[in-house]
Image: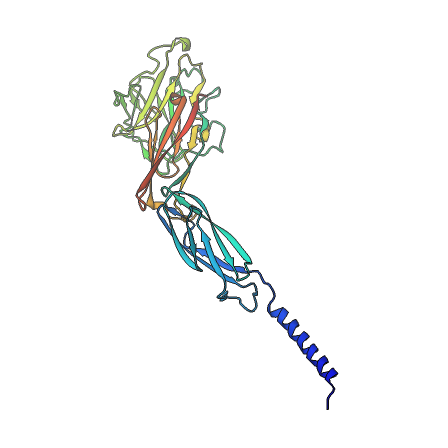
Amino acid sequence: MLSRKPMLILFLLSLCLGLLVGCDEGENLVPVLTRVQVSSQCGVAPLDVQFIAIASGGDQLDAPTGGNSYLNYDWTFGDNSTGTGSITSHTFTVPGNYDVVIAVTDNDDDRATMIVPVEVRADSLILITTPDTTVTASLTTFDSPTPRASNGAAEGRPVDTGLIINEVLIFNVTTLADNTGQFGAFMEVLNTGTSAVNLQGFSVTTDPFLPDMHILGNNTSIAPGEFQLIWLDGRNQNLEDAHTNFDIRNGVTDPAAWTGATIYLLAPNNTLLDIMEIPAAPTADVSFGRVYDAGTGGTVELNLWADVCGFDQDYGNYSRFEFIWTIDDVLSSTYVGRSPRHTFTTADAGTRTAHLRIYDTFQGVFRNTTVSIEVTAP
């Protein structure tokens, strides 16, 4: 017959072992959020969003999927609305930035939380343009004129606009003689485009209301990046270089007495291609011309990007957007596209404004913005 004392010892040992095991099984574990996802973190009001949260009781090994029935899921959406459950949804009706909070609580009130930001917009567009800026008009003086050559800045990137007036020398005394040995005023036309241009039918004038003052008749083709001289001396000849039928100096021989002029270059359909305003009293053998031979000296990049919630501006398809730029320069220039390049001339000196209207054809919304540009004369 067994003694009562050993039996009591065995009972106490088994009880202690059971308590130890029970302590491991009943350890107070804090809930862990293993996954939280939303259907959209950005959109246009009213915005419907679906929310999913998955949590475990804190034991990642025994309950990795969070299938613990005693966990409570509570949502606060940041607009005085709440929701419950592992899966829920909410409609945001007022534009704003909301911090959505998911809180998971177990049966002894241990708690885990996570914040999910949601942005709700009034419309789909965000615009970022070039900031207000200052540019120097693309016209300057050159003490050493360089007809048919660079003005000394080969790094200048051409403005791809086709034909432009690149350099003008009014009182050409010793710089360059024509093929008959005479010195006269001349202009230099530069082809900044990517295709050759035939000058037949183009015109030069000092009066925009008389676009046909002189029509070029020589069958001269200018290759991309090449120059062509047009003499402004009133000889009305189309030789190797064209000579206009008007003398831009009007017989004035003293530079100090000359009152200035504006030269217009037009296409055969009288479309204005370029203008250059030459101030009064120019110095002899000093020319006026584009900085860097039509480089970026007077050019402003009207860069921008448009964003729709969830739209990646680096990789997205911008064909859904329509961009229209209007600039209040002397020509009232208009461009279509995201990033036009515009060259200001000295006639534009002062404060100019580039107006942009962008339309999202998918969302049916538009927005307007402006860029202020201070144009200074060289």
